[in-house]
Length: 493
Image (cartoon, rainbow, N blue to C red):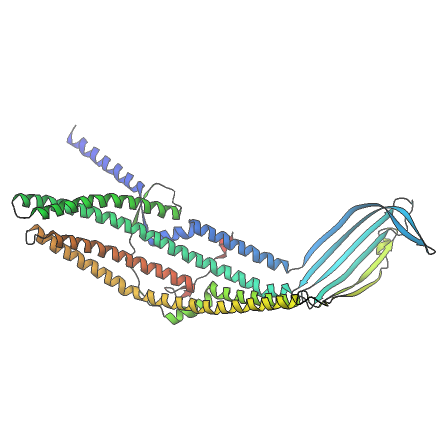
């Protein structure tokens, strides 16, 4: 084959290999990984569906407080029965057979403040005696009437729901934002776990290459009698350990990559290469300001209020349920009957009705009093628990802000330690190679210190980013942009 053809073939092979490498690997930054996790991870999908459920629950609640129109009908009702009748004081029984039909259109509205219900109704009914050829005014109509049903001294669930349901919906919105920040925390942990595995593999391969070189040099020095057999054996042992570490690093990397891709729901077969987030814009968070923001924005603060309201609602229910009850029922409107449907609406007469129902417990042997005491005790338990949880919550936010502020120093120390350890190892390695020192122990210690320093640096990076997203979760505040985190309601579509 001519040299020119060989050159062309090599170039083609190089291009094919380059294209294959590009297709089998994928680079990801932390920001890209977070974006994928917040969009398509299983946790993100579950959080979205949970919020949608809360959204529609609140929509159902608000719709239940609006006027609602209903139509009820019986078409038809066929009845054949024997019933009693009295004529001139003489009781007798007779067989009846009739067919009836009725329909009612009602526009109803709940009264949240009082717990009552008001409705506007229009009714039309008819009853035909099957045994008679003629029926006198079989049609009955209530063209329009207004009906009020108002319980008094009873538990008003509507009033409590008006306080609790909006609170629960606001809490659901904040909880969704917190879930997204928790997803960022989890994604960060998976990201750095994979990154550490890639670093471990790089370190193990570097160590294997270094110990391979050192072991070959040591064999030559041993043959010349410059080092003891024990030093040669120590290097051989380090070389064998380095080989085992490469295999262990490959397995750990494969496992970490599988878990990372599973969390992000990446179903391709490409190898992931992570880009370390080394460029950090450091800033400080005022711990007191963080606590104040958490009190204003977190779902926990709303949850404390919800639990107190529900406990107070339980006490109110115990005090009103099963005690003295009264219900007022009032109706005013028009009514008429007729032989035909038009006659049933002609010159309607007034219709009025008022009734008061009472329920008065005489002796209950202390049942109601016991329920009240239990509800009050439960309310005190909730109050004490909430008070302690508020203290713990605020302390956790304060410490998390302090811990975040420490990370700038920690990362700088870790980076400096990594640089110093590398330089120290290179110096010791160089001195060993030129025969200035013969102790393999110093070389091994320097290698271990270098490896640990590099790992510690990436651990410090992981701690920084994890703390950053945790403080965002606790406060629902973006400290970089100096603004509250906002919910995009388009997620419910």
